[in-house]
Structure formats: C-alpha cells, structure tokens
Length: 161
Image (spheres, rainbow, N blue to C red):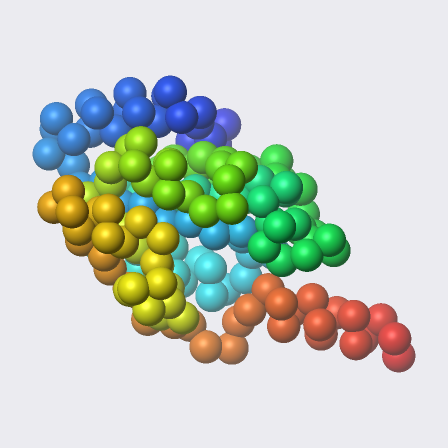
C-alpha cells in the first residue's frame, strides 16, 4: 500500500536496521520532485537498479521555498510524497525540513548515496560522510530534455498567449 511507503524517521530507522541485518543494499536519493516528469521516473528506476531498497528524501514545502524561491513548490508536500511513493521503483519516502538531507543521511546511513548526472560528487551533500562510513556515491546519467523549471517556464509562456 502506498501509504505504508511514506515513513517517519523513527519508522525508517527501524526498517533500515532490519534490512541491513538481512544484507540488503540501501540506496538513498533526495530532491524536490515538484512536478514529476519522465526524467524523474527514469532516474529513480536507474537508482533502484543499483540497490535493493531505494529511499527517497523529499524536501518539505518550507525547505523548497528556501532553495527555489517564494513561488515554489507548485505541488504541496503531501501530494509530492504520495506521487513518489506510488512509483514501483521507490520503496520508502520520507520528508525532510532542513535545506539539505545531511541529518537524514547521517541518521539512516545508506550504503549508496545516489544523485543525478547534473551533480558533481564533491557537491553532493553527504558524500564525504557516506564514504567515511564505507558507503559509495553513485551518479546516475542525467536525462536530458526534462526539468521542472523548464516545464514551469513553458506553462507560463503558453498561458500568456
């Protein structure tokens, strides 16, 4: 059930502990996922291909405003959590309110920290920490032609005509 995939930090810690004892490889990624598009879907499927359990951290509405500005997010956090949780490639979804997921990463200690190809490893929040505990950072190739910002701009341009 989709709702069971949306978890609190306490629930996630329990699940991750149990999964690690079962030798499951835990992957973590994060993002705003403001308007879900094919680039997101492809990225999350490729992320799932390299781990047993894929956890997605989703920025809260307040943290998105700090990162993207006052006009974002387009969709409220509850909708974004539900939509991402509905994806077959995603095992668990958790909301975080900080500007970065560093505290969340330190709390769950995934085996893999996964980001898209538009990131450089040295710029990925938590990469140094993950490597210091024996984990790995994996970068999934960027899916060109898809961006939430470009979608929003396209919608706004069409609305003016």
